[in-house]
Image 1 (cartoon, rainbow, N blue to C red):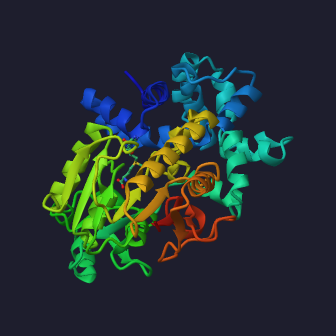
Image 2 (cartoon, helix red, strand yellow; image 1 turned 180 degrees about the vertical axis):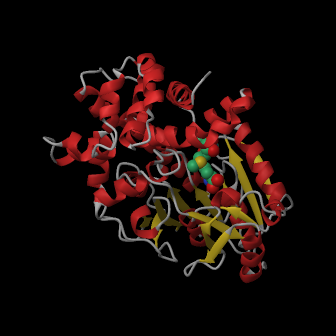
Length: 424
Ligand SMILES: C[S@@+](CC[C@H](N)C(=O)[O-])C[C@H]1O[C@@H](n2cnc3c(N)ncnc32)[C@H](O)[C@@H]1O
């Protein structure tokens, strides 16, 4: 009989091999193996735990004489077993059954139970210590250090934990009434003090997409920092677009904020299928049009406001997708920043005087955010940076007119937001 640890190892190995989302790979696995459905909660804990702490687990394994580390299924199983042992939850019967499959000695494994992870970083200092203790590749830490994040260890700790969840509420829906309805279904929300259409999920996040009100489109799941992007765009009465729209979360927000008409584009048709579902649930098909297109080659006309929310390193979303840490490289970062610059430049070129661009990315590296904007402003004298109001975040160094939201300070995803105006 297959055990949850083996399933977790298999899902982890496939995730890295395909550079896919852990969630998608797990959904695929359990739909092919419905008889194992009961394992879902434990597999979720194990896969997230390993993805969040993989470098520390490797260090423990190497200190026991194993290695070198890899992303093979067998090494993933070793990581899973060490993770379970350090959390004090590995049962001796399980260890004896599985250790051999992972190439480990069960007694050595069982000795790890309840050990303090800090013991294994003794002898390391500075970035090397942070890199192993929080399991962040060194280059990523160098990038975050350069971005001058206040209290970096706290940020890393929070990025390795579950996120605070937020919802965005449809205009005209009474927040008190909605809170009462949701409470009856096990979801407790608390209105946000900064944004009038945002509420924090205090309890029952896993039920939040199963309520009647969700199905009826009275609210949607959206992080507060991501909702802030729509407010900064301020699209009321204007013709708007999100040419990298994905599931149309921000595009649908612009419609709720009173945009006259919205174009939601994406280069991948399957992402627009997700957008279609979002828009149909929210009843927005009459305001938002979908378009398959490459944002580097403008296919739109006469827009007043555009959100440019392009692909990025996703470091601000690591609470949701820690698996990205296992494969992302500095080379990816350079690819993303060039792509961001090309999309921004093509949007800027296509817009008339007086139009607005909001550049947002769920990452915090200066090599994306600040570098991209500096390059854009150097080469486009007809574009200037303006205040991204409302300002809820803190100001990144060197760009006093942008703002960034930080998971450990603002309880949101890590996000960078800047607003640009076309002045000629
Ligand atoms: C960060 S996601 C966008 C999220 C979206 N704005 C939202 O609020 O839900 C980036 C999206 O850009 C799309 N993309 C990547 N390259 C693109 C390109 N050259 N043109 C248009 N879309 C692109 C990806 O398919 C992905 O869906």
